[in-house]
Length: 228
Image (cartoon, rainbow, N blue to C red; front, side, top):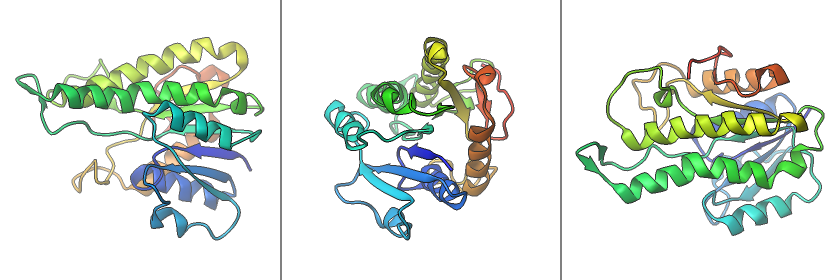
């Protein structure tokens, strides 16, 4: 039994990660953006295993308030799941620049700032882990077109997590970006390859198996190493 933090937990992969960790007997701290906890999460509060906290991942005051609310709580796994697909217009000839900046703020910068804010809590764990939900759409080894804002934000967060893994190695904190698969969610669409349950089960299993030898690697939801 461990203590897990999942950001962006009100729907999609985040919500399913909460359900999966709870089913395995873990304590879960789930974050949401809305003023009040959404019903998708409150309906899961049948025991004291689930703690709900508000968090706006682009607001430094919200991040600090969230960290302070945890007091001396030990965190075993932090899953930086909160993310966006980016603006409607993100082609090379039609780019919503403000939307691109916001995509970077949420997908790339926020995971680092949140991780930093929770380092003292992670340090209390015997095997602390930070998983950041990324995407193979940000892998430089793959050739594909379009979605400039989303792809670039995920490529950047991959590098951020690779560097962070090196810098936190001495503290024994495992850091890995994870490709969750092409998942049937609001973001992934109905044509996606796998269900949200399959993705969440794989990510949870991966989080349980990672060692320091894996830190800084890019993994898929199945636990396979992904080319950068």
